[in-house]
Image (cartoon, rainbow, N blue to C red):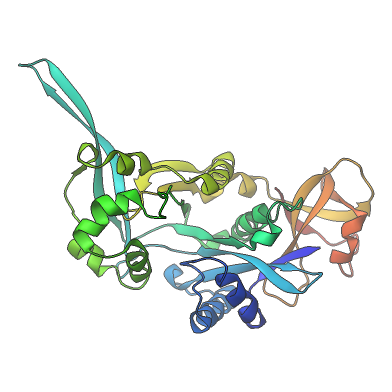
Length: 338
C-alpha cells in the first residue's frame, strides 16, 4: 500500500537518497538545500504567502510496507516575477518571397521572451526506478496528486498551469540546441547554466541573443530538437495532452524542450472533482480514484484506491479499507478519477 502526502522534515534522508539516483535540478544531492526546500514547503502548506512566487509545495509518495518515501512531485505557485523572470524562446515562422525570381521560403524562427507575471508551474516528478511499472500507477499518482490539491485549493494558484518537458539529448547526453546556441553565447556547460539559472537569471538577459534566430542557420540536430520530447518523456507528454494541456509554441531557451499549458479550470481532473461518501465491497470491475483524506497528521494526505462510483457514493474495494481510519457513512471525501 502507498500514500501521498505533504512532505515532512523526517523525509530528509529518504529524499536525499532519492536525489542520488539521478541528477535532479529540483532535488539536488545536497542535504542542506533539500532541508530548506522541505521547510519552505511546510510553510506553504500551513500558511501560504500572499506572494505566490514564495510558495513551493512538495508531495511525497510513501511505501507503507517499508515506511520509505519512494517518489515526489512539486508545484511552484508562480514561476516568473520581476526579480526572477520566466525566460522562453517563442517558436514562430517568417515567410520570405521574391517576386523577381518567383521564389519563397518559410523559415522557422526563435526569439527570446520574458514573462514577469508567470503562471503556476508543475514539475519535480521523481520516482524511484525500482517502482516503475507498478500496477498501481505510481507515477500517475504523483502527477495527479498535484491536480487534486489545486482543485481543492484553487485560490492558492494562478489561473494558468505550466509544465516544461525534457527534449531529446544526443548519444553523449548533450543538448543539440544548447551546443548550437547556448554554448556559443554563454560559454558554459548546459548543466552548469541550468543550475545557475535557478538562482541567477541576469546572465541570460545579458548574454543570450535577443534578436530573431533563424532555425535555418542551426544544425539539423538542433532544429529537430526544438519543441520535441525525449523518448522517456513521451508518456508524460501524452498524459498532459489527455487532460487538457497544449503545446503553446514556446520552448526552453537552453535545450528547446516544449512548454505546455492549460487553464486550471479546464483541467480534466479539476472538472471531474466530486465529493462522495464511501463504502467498501469486493468488486471485480473497478477504476482508480485519488481520494483526499480528511483526517491526517499531515497538512495534506491522499490515497489511490480502486472502486466504483455510484452517484455521490464511492464503493471502494475492501482491500483498501485499512487506508481509511474511523470512517463513518456521514463523512464525505473529495475525489478525482485517474
